[in-house]
Length: 240
Image (cartoon, rainbow, N blue to C red):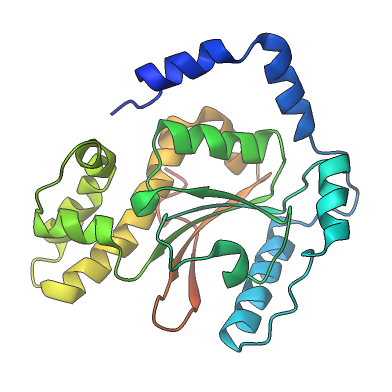
């Protein structure tokens, strides 16, 4: 499945002159920051923020007009790259009680890792130097449910969810006793691991940074019913 050479993307490539592209890159370039958090510190910030969100006690850090001006003038310095679903019930910055410039978010139906998403993550870890990558699925994911149920899909949705099929097939093959909501829940978790697997297998830059210990990549599941994020740790077969 390739989504990087569509006619619309080819048009976009010719619309941006080299000078314009250079300006866009510099606008997001991070400055050297001696106080940049480690992966574990970044994870703690996310955990603590989610606790505040669930307890309805947000601090709303970095959400002032001054913060907006600061990031516009000095660039962005996010401490985590987060790949998650496009579901409107999953407001990422609010879920982690973070503000402007804190997290570099990639959103797509089914939180899949394909060309566009992987390229964006590479920008996050390679250019913005985020030490932590979180691939976060969520309960009741419509994209995963559609694949599990074999729903008829139209337009570009069918090729989009192709990335989810290996996860669903894996669960059906290895957990034949599951059905209904339990099957969907297991497939949602497997799809998080599938996205991480796709990222590491297809991105040499990300794979190298992870193997050197420069970044940490973990999976997570967001519960739509209560707002809690369950962090699942690194891919069980990441060393592969």
